[in-house]
Image (tube, rainbow, N blue to C red):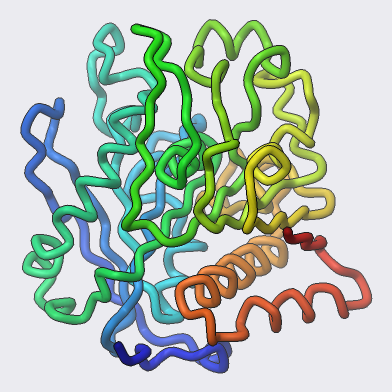
Length: 319
C-alpha cells in the first residue's frame, strides 16, 4: 500500500480542514445514537485515522464532540482524519443522573470507539468529501484524562468489573498505536477515598497487558490530588507499569490541562500555555506518524528538536 501524500516535512505546511458534525451512527441498545465530529484535510488520500476520546471536566461542551479543537485541528491539518465521539457521560446529553448511562462509564466509552471502527464506511458515506479517502488499516486512539483511561483499555489495559468481579478485556486489535494525555494511573492504595467511591473501576487497572505502542504524556505538576495520593507520577504509570514499546513525554510545569488541550481559551485550564499546547500537538502528531509509518522519521526529528532547544518544554524517554 502506498503512503498518503503527507510526509514528515509537511508539518510546516498545514492543509485547510473540513469538519462535519454531528454525524450520527446507529447504536442499538445504547441510550442514544452515537454522535461524532469528523475533521479531515481537504486534500489527500489513504488518510490515517485518530479516534479522540474526551475527558470529563466542569464545562458543558468540552466533554463532547465539540472539545479538543487545538489537537483535532492540528492533526487534521497535517494529514489525519480525526473522529470525536460524544460519550454517554457527556454533560451535553443531559441524561437522567439517576440512570447508569449518566455516570462516567468505562465500558460504553470503549464500545463507542469500537463502534466507530466498525462503521468507518458509514462515516465515509455520510461525509461525501471523505468517500474513499480513509486508510482503514491505520487507526490510532488518543484520549485526555478520563478519555485517556478509555484509550488505555483499547490499547490493552484491563480491569475487574466492580459489578460482577470479572476481568474485562476491551483491547481493540485494529488500533495500531495510542496517545494517553494526563491519563489515570494505577489503582489500589494510590487512590483517594473520593476516587474509590466515585470511580471504583480505577481500583483494579492493570497496565501489564497494554502491549500496543503508546505515547504517555504527563505534566510534572499534575498532582490530581482529589483522585490520587501518588502525586504527579501517577499519570506516568501507564508508561512505567506497561510493557514496551512505550514512550513518555514529561511536560515541565504542566498541570492537568497540559497547557489547554481541551479547547481554546478554556477557563478551567489551570496552566494555560499556548506554546505547550502547540508542542503537545506537534509531538503527538509526530509519534503517531512514525508508529503508523515506521519509515517516517517525524518522531525522532521532533524528539531531537525538543531536546536541542535552549529552554525545553519537556523531555522524552522510551523503552
